[in-house]
Length: 158
Image 1 (cartoon, rainbow, N blue to C red):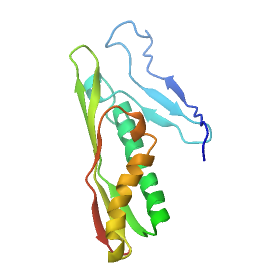
Image 2 (cartoon, rainbow, N blue to C red):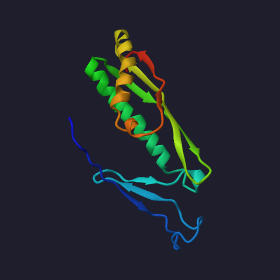
Image 3 (cartoon, rainbow, N blue to C red):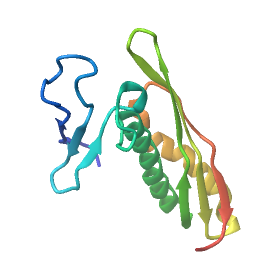
């Protein structure tokens, strides 16, 4: 399936406390993220940047996109090689480094998927499917920092 795909999202700043951005501490970092036909996401800046820690922040959303993209690519890779996945869970972490000039960048993301497959004979192919998933993941292919995988594979159902 070749082709160009387009995505649309509306970000709405909802943090005007009555004086707009009259000062750095005078406005809330609240944002609503909306995609047509889906529940809105209440977002904010991360707490160190005067955000609301109870809301999703851009750094968490990037980490979530990488984790989910790998998961979905991995399930597809397993399907194409006959690996039956019975459970998948990822405890992903990301590291962002500030540059001292009000900017910064992610330096690394580590995905730690714990995968359960149906049979012992599938373990090697299940391990190899992570490499294929990395090649297929659109999000990982779009970032300029390493996305590493520390996968654990077990055997069983339910």
